[in-house]
Image 1: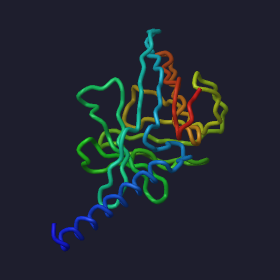
Image 2: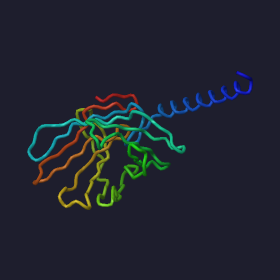
Image 3: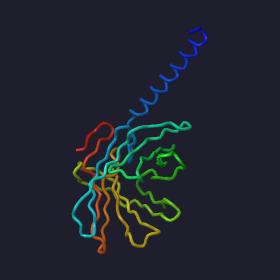
Image 4: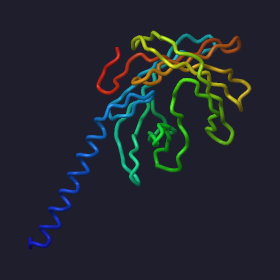
Length: 205
């Protein structure tokens, strides 16, 4: 290998090494938001269906990888159980803390969740025929199998669906989504509760 090509090879190697170090550093940064994104973060939920059915189902979401596109860092997430409509998806945060999503093919972005904070109220247009109002209600202490957490409570009101009643969600800072609860005379009680999590290296419970 002559000197010219040897120099080019060394420069390319150093560039790759620098990028790898940067990605690793980014992945180790602690995210203390209401949806912490870091490789290895994992949330396991128990879902209780309504309609008088007492059996439960398990859902797990995990951050498994990152990819950088046009200087934006995306986190790849998967869900279990998986099906043909759930081949993984990508999330990224903008400069003000809003979370945006892309599908498995990294297509167009859509708003996944605004930055959560007290007194927040906004209309979330999820699709052309699907939107809801998300409103801050209170600060609650919630106890679930994963532990006891101080949470922001939000009321979620579907705007295009006259069948599904308003429901409530609780989020804990530095942990994420802790519980969802829907209750009505027609469909009974539907709950999704956090049973186990690993966030920023901390295990719950």
